Structure formats: structure tokens, C-alpha cells
View 1: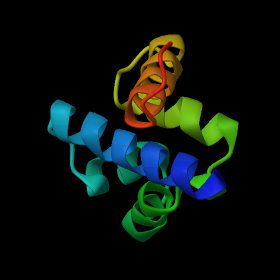
View 2 (view 1 turned 180 degrees about the vertical axis):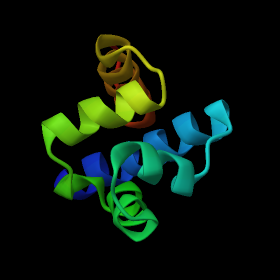
View 3 (view 1 turned 60 degrees about the horizontal axis):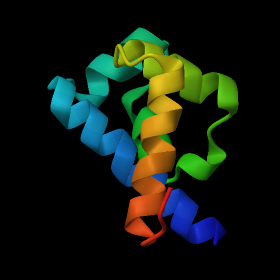
Length: 83
């Protein structure tokens, strides 16, 4: 279960970044972390704190509530669950 959540969140973070046409470097700069640090978070988001996820949502210009609601909806759909 933990691995699936990690994979879903990783895919969702990448999807948001691609939709906004923002590079990993641009997000890293706005978060004041290295690109490698952000890349690690994107590839293994289970290590991201809730505060960091909220910051990423703000940088991507995604309302935090919408950010998490969309993530949960995407996760439920990918697991073939009805919301």
C-alpha cells in the first residue's frame, strides 16, 4: 500500500509540473532547494513532509485543498475505487 501511494504521488507531482510547464530546476529554485533534492522528492515523495507538499502546491500555483483533493481522486481512480 505504501509503495502504491508513493508511486501515485510521484506521478501526480510530475503531471502537475508538466501541466504547468515548469522544470524541476524552476521548482527547486522557488523552494530554495537543489534540483537534485527536488528530483529525489518527485521520485520518492514518501520522504516529503506535509509542509513541503504544501509549498510545492503553492509553487505550482495549485490551491492546497485542490492539490490534495485531486491527488486523492487520482489515487482512488488509479486503484479502481469509487469516490
